[in-house]
Amino acid sequence: MQQLSVDSCEPLEEYHLKNRLYLTGLMLLSACNFSVDTETNEPDHPSADATRLADTDPLHFADAKAGSTSFTETPVLRAQVILDRLGFSPGVIDGEKGQSYDAALRAFQKAKGLDESGALDQPTLAAMQAGREVAATRLVTIPAAFAKGPFFPDLPDGAAKQAELPELGYKNLMEALAERFHTTPETLIALNSRDTKIGAGKVIRVPNIADVSPLADQDDRGWSETLQKLGVASQQPTASKLVVDKSEGVLRAYDDKGDLIGQFPATMGSGHDPLPIGTWKIQGVSRNPDFHYNPKLFWDVSDDKEAQLLPPGPNGPVGVVWIDLSKPHYGIHGTNAPHTIGRAESHGCVRLTNWDAARLAQMVKPGVEAVFQE
Image (tube, rainbow, N blue to C red; front, side, top):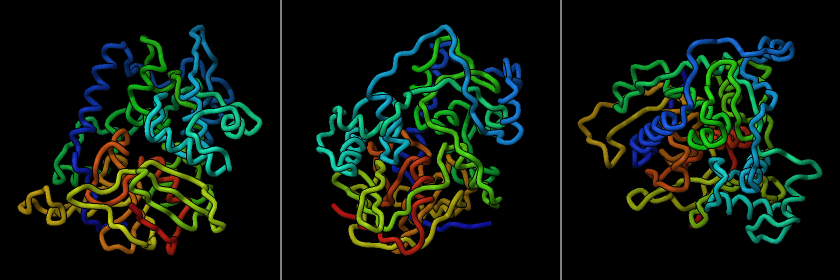
């Protein structure tokens, strides 16, 4: 199997923030009566089209008919969805204004030659819609292939125990759905009614992140399935240069003409492990990588711990992607805690949400310049 050696990319919080979010989600689920349906693996009312799609594309989320419950979308939620679809990521889609949303809006304005106000004005909205309206959310039917996992509800914290697992996958269906639609469990709860159930064939309202088709070519790392489970298209614009801007907290991608073609919120460095300022080159891209966990390379981990080879998975220390840099032991990678991006510290590497890291992996190749600046 492909192996990965890195030094210092475990989030400083390790897993406790992720576990806190998971526990918070469980409490909200209980409070909102938002439950997992374990009684059936069949859709409530499968259509002929849905049945055909399930045969040819088992991870396709078929659109469902709206029921009697109405939904009023907010301008921010719709803007976040559109920006995400255009490659100017707001981070997690939650309908809330914040640093990542403002930065994404300004980046889009810059790319389109608009006034970089950071405000959702009429010229910006018109450019975002490009002649067609995109809804903020959609109702979908959860496919059985997606709902079956596998899930790892008792995912351990320790590296030694994690090394025994076949993969570091999602803890539950709720976590998987949140990453598939670039959001959080709390947002999914807020978008749905108190009696909504999740499970195979159940209908749920989600941010309008489109389905993507599986890759034509098979791959031994399961990358096609990963892209589908993250809602990331394999075809992306080609980046010729990356700029990691510490002051803005973002990673920007430029094409060979110097035009801005994408931006992603990022977590980068800390006081103990600062971002390595300088110009580096991409050495390679590892998709669904294994992770060589070496305690000697982490200042906040005891050297008495044994090194471990951790299996791949979205809940691994580097998420679903490792983009290797010419700076030894440093890279750009995913995360097991997407809600912390832009809000936490790292051990020097550049962390993105798993869906943004997957998108960037499709944009770059070895030799692309990566400038790290203050």
